[in-house]
Length: 130
Image (cartoon, rainbow, N blue to C red; front, side):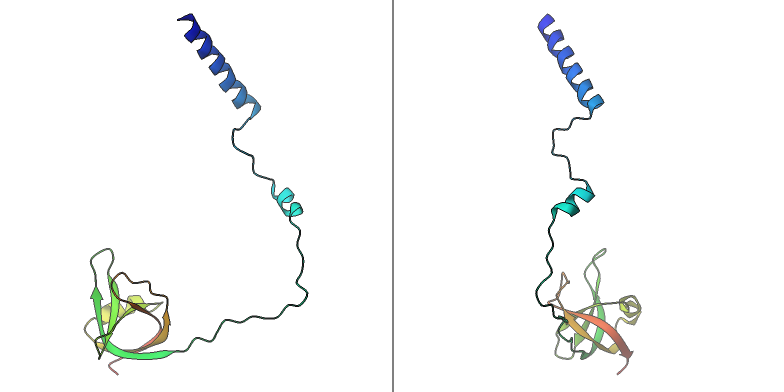
């Protein structure tokens, strides 16, 4: 029993010392100024401007509908051939009110973000009933 008390008191003393002295068992992160000074930067011999490839706008005419269940409802534009496009962009909230109507959407195809369809269109503008 006394050996348990001795171990407990040693452990308590150890914990107290680590708290008071600020010891840590994980490596301390470098100060920001140390990290900046330890990195050597070199400028490239020749720099050239790199621009993003031009994005072509496409036009899709079709019917607006909602797919999925809450909270994962997506607005989709289904063209005349039956291909659905997930609609994203600033005008997406306005398009929810146009369900069942025919619109023409102008935008660019982007990386697919849909759970339900294979193509995603970032809508830049649209016209109702065209």
